[in-house]
Image (tube, rainbow, N blue to C red):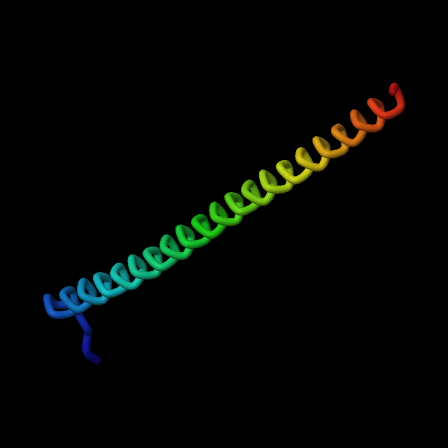
Length: 81
């Protein structure tokens, strides 16, 4: 019956394995952070596009209202004469 003891070589091996695990975790977290930043950027772009489209729509509606107002003024002017 032999007793296995952890010597300095076993401790160095465990330390190396722990370093590899830490590096793997750091890389995984780095990839997650990059993905999160990418998604945040896409979300900001989408929000910006929605604002631009909304501004364009508001401009169209304003011009349409101005044309309707001009038609009403002309119709009133014709009716008064």
